[in-house]
Length: 422
Image 1 (tube, helix red, strand yellow):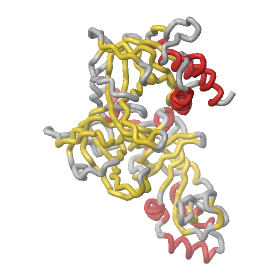
Image 2 (tube, helix red, strand yellow):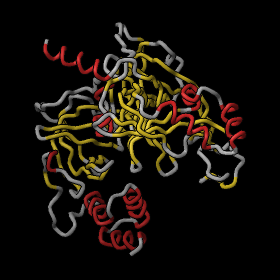
Image 3 (tube, rainbow, N blue to C red):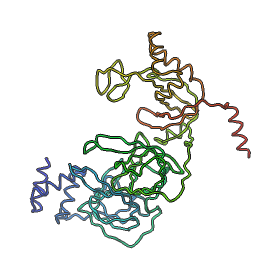
Image 4 (cartoon, rainbow, N blue to C red):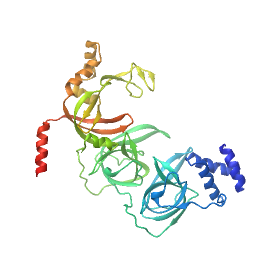
């Protein structure tokens, strides 16, 4: 049955205008609400219980699932974020964050301004439930009734104050106190044409994370210590990334930050099991250099590595020469592929792209460059710092520092035993 047929039948049952019902129905369906749930929601909106059925059931947050349809919950508002999105071709301001009761937490998106503030206790009646990033999320729309209640106690922090180490993709309405340690301004092709943004790295006492400021604020400058309120977190290359929206507030920080220059030391297993980590350090031996290392060619359009002059996205191209190493690192707990860019590859190779081209030309074989790199690093132990991402193809560590270990493993073992003995 088509959407038009559903709308016509529903309008006939309710005795209201078909076009109005169709528009409402289409909005719900486009937001991934199942058609039968959408029809029930419109029956409630237009005053029909749908054949005598009762309204949405009251539920504890822990019991809400993606199959719940619509529910009524009483909860405390932990966070409230505000941002603008493009919805059905129009700008739409939404409010989003997290709710909690004594049984658990759940994220929400409000499509209207219900006047929510962190710390409020509310009953959200007829709140739709959708799946978002594999978890249930409450959808508060025009058919939702919000009532403010007496305060309830919940075992969760209210207000969105956080440090970088605790952030996870999906966090919204978050407040941070950070230092901008790296920043660059660039022009991107945004939803409204060319857009100036700033991106870089933030740091606090606990961690470092990448960020994007979609408004390119002048206050976002290298070395600036800031308090930022109402940011949201997305996943970028397997790690949390802090995003500043047009509603984010930025102010100078009135205290010093003890920002660490050191990366978080982890075993390979710990790093991989984390699902992705920014600015980590592992210690391990290079056991192999993978194919696709040494002297390579990249597509001039997208930068992808080409194979036999072919780019997966742009077809036949005149590739540009580059250097890269993909080294397998083993620390005894697991393995990870360390990816060295041209600068760091040149350091371990002992020459630049022109040197590599000359060597390959003399040998009439590009593989000699990778072989030379293998001779330099395989079987040796390195401290490797970088950003880890994990996907269906495995774990990759984008290297920022690559240093051979000076101390012998036996000496480190003795030092560790002495430390434990104390």
